[in-house]
Image 1 (cartoon, rainbow, N blue to C red):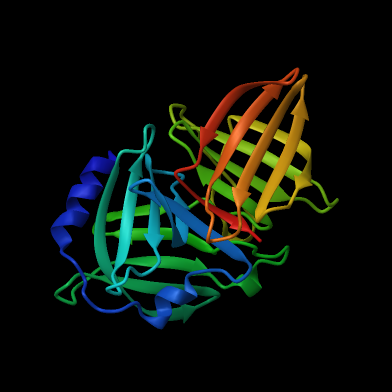
Image 2 (cartoon, rainbow, N blue to C red):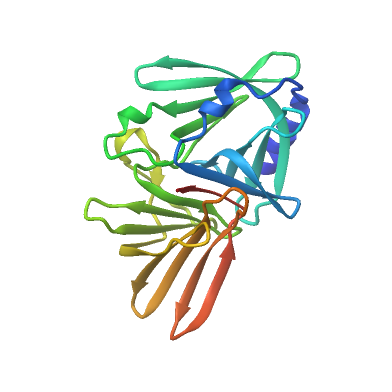
Amino acid sequence: MRARWIGAAWLGAGAAMAALTPAAAQLRALGAVSMQRVDGAWRPAAFVCDSTDRDWAIVMSAPDPQGQVTLTSYAKPGLASHRAQVRVGQGDASMGHVWYTLSNAAGREIGAVETLSPQMVEPGATTPTVVSLRYGPTTSACRFAPQTRVLGVTAKRSIQVTGDARGGYRYRSYNHDAVLGAVDAPWGGHDTRASVTIDGGRLVDQSRGRRTYQFERDGYEYRVSAAVDPAQGGGAVQVWRDGRMLLDEPFAAYTAAM
């Protein structure tokens, strides 16, 4: 199912003119920043849902000056985008999960966002705990792992950096043009088989409102950077060898732990 379809469905749902509810603010995570690039500028977001079973990523924005909340779907690969505005209802908690309803301008329920209670995630939830998003008949599982430091989406791949129990970091990339089967994920999360996995990473820079993580394998250096200052925004994955940059892919949207 292509993201252009879901984008068309969202656009047909209409705009919600109500101001951002307290529930929408609760979808964010304390100690994390989510950002998306819109019309050439970085803007704060509530969360990034990198779908593990659909070919898109979905971002919920922070409120605009009129108090509207925008959902943006990004097609994988390429990240062609479609936008729609919805209203987010109050959370309904049950068995360690919280569901937030999505409604259209007429007040009709058209979907829901499912989150985990952060207290359920024993290793620690460092980014928004969104694990699924339903819109109309379509439900997307959202990539989530404890101790996430960066989750970003480029035109060609998704990138995830997580902390480990030894104080290091793990790098995973997920190519958008590959078929990557689902794998078991602990603590209620979702994941797929990774295209590349590298352990033993280090936080090599945390100056100027940015975090940069570095990983090494077979003579290559993988660097993942993300701004944690909402006034800046920006992030990317780079691959280096012998002092030459071989790959530089900017994020279109990302979540990063501060």
